Figure (tube, rainbow, N blue to C red):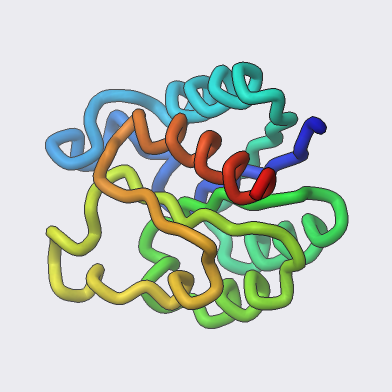
Length: 146
């Protein structure tokens, strides 16, 4: 069975390779999405990607995903730590959810240690950089296949 997955990348991820390369490396968002797409093909997953700087657009995309996608992989950037509207949208989503981070928020500034998305996610992958996007595909396939 081929599962449909939506990868949502939030604010500032469009600035990968430019913003804080000492933390996030020199790869672009397109590079990250390319790794995810390759992993999706290898795992018989149909993957769509969405990126927005807007909290409202991300909430709307999560609402549209309900019934259309079997799972979501979400790298919400800073919205992870305070967006109750995204948390509520994910709580109402009927599929599996993987929270994803390039860096390890628990090893960074204290304001990054809390995730309002964690309670409504099925799993978390953080700190693996580019590899995290590949791991997220494998993880969500495992969740969906039981």
